[in-house]
Image (cartoon, rainbow, N blue to C red; front, side, top):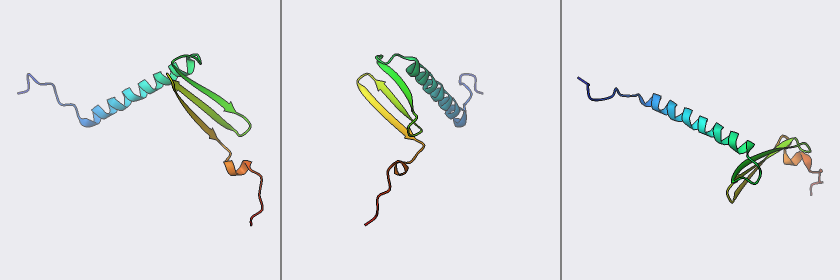
Length: 85
């Protein structure tokens, strides 16, 4: 007789709800960060770099600044060949 207790929720259901909530919060933060002005306390700036087919991502949270750069071309392909010894 389980009149006073809620039915048990399986662990898998809890984990799926937690993952769904985390994804929703992450998408909301990215949406707010991308649309925020540059001088805002939280902003995300994405800039394409056409010279080496890459992108630069700058994330600012108050005084902390994070920079991420990615290039489709490896660093070795942009350097001139040097003769070996």
